[in-house]
Amino acid sequence: MYDIVIIGAGVSGCAVAKELSKYQMRICVIEKETDICEGTSKANSGIVNAGFDPEPGKLCAKLNARGAEMLQQIAEDLDIPYKRNGTMVVCSNPDDLPMLKVLYDRGNTNGVRGLRILNREEAFQMEPNLADGVCGALLAPTGGIICPFTLTLAFAEVAALNGVEFRLGEAVTDIQKGEKGYRLTTSRGQLETKYVINAAGVYADLFHNMVSEDKIHIVPRKGEYCLMDKIPKDYLHHTIFPVPSVMGKGVIVSPTVHGNMLIGPTAVDVQDREDTSTTAEGLARVIKLSALSVKNIPYSTIITSFAGLRAHEDGDDFIIEEVPDAKGFIDVAGIKSPGLASSPMVALYVRDILSNLCELKEKKTYVTKRKGIVRFAELSVQEQKALIRDDPAYGRIVCRCEKVTEGEILDAIRRPLGAVTMDGIKRRTRAGMGRCQAGFCTPRVMEILSKELAVGREEIRKNRDGSVLIKGRNKENI
Image 1 (cartoon, rainbow, N blue to C red):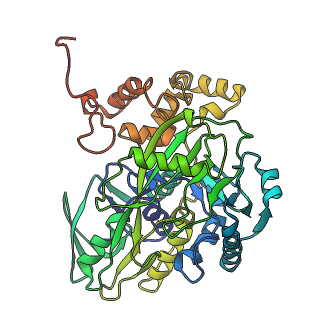
Image 2: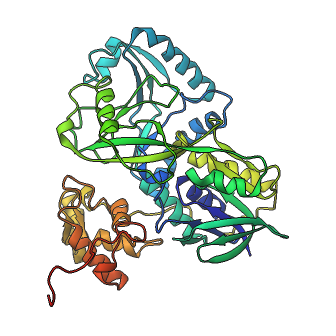
């Protein structure tokens, strides 16, 4: 019998797991995919929204600004790439200028610090490469960019170090109310728990509706992105948003924390909860709309495109509560943007709900900080030499584009909740995220994974079950 079962190992589920790992409870996280951060969270823009967009009174407005403020210290404690680069909302149509004041007032109500409305000259002084049609902007200095993979993985690693069990590659298929809590049927059997925390992203409504007569409905909202190669440091500093629409914050143009440029997303409601395909039409729209905010975008340097699904609940707000007719079942549902920025506060909000249901006894000792994988390319020459002397594996470059070493890949496999797939290596180390998109490093990464996991290379997967890279041999006896 578990005390708590968390369904979903995205950023919300892992943030909750980390927070609750401080207490004397038997906790497990169940995730249908084979790794952490395989769903919505892996296709995140990495934007730390400051909190000026949500309408005051909504739960997401309550959690956003404070969560964004917390992430700076969290990034320091957990060794997560993060930069407070600031956000600009630019207006390209004079008729939309009043919307900047609306966002300014919302932000002040929501507790966002330092907001300013800029005229055209002030905006161009800060960002000379804004599109010529920009006529004004809202500046939010507390906006930031972060590595969404490392954030989610860091939450999970700390939770695991504090005793949380992660059951990966295990899908929940049914939930029934039992005498002492809930009985969950999974792809591997059954388990029982006193409390359930439903952080299942685009699937959260399915689990909620298994236990409640008051149904909720989530629509997957697909967003397509283009990622460009490294950009000059002085080309763009802030994250650039257009004035938002009813479908979301619009197509952003932003540097990433790793020095690339990201544009997107689109916003199209789909029915298939696994539809992360990109389309020519969607990517063309991203390119067209991004040009309204920033000029001379180097589209010729696009190295990849991708899509993700946001969990859009019909009420257009976060749902974080104990389900009224399912005691002990706590929803963390409808967590779309600004879910990443809000994740630390989502965890605290869930903790407070639980504190009213049971006694939370804090452990005498628990892990609060985490050291991430060494980023060899960011070290000084002296630091690199010292590291190689201690471990020669750091002297062997595997990914030339991102300068990722064998030592980093070994660490990614051997650390808590280590990588077991090619995508797992990529998210932890960036091997395969560079200009050639794994064209050079794939065979070597497969070789390292094969040796460390003691499996044949034909068993190495890209991500989920069935995604093997080697389907057979083209020559025998080789």
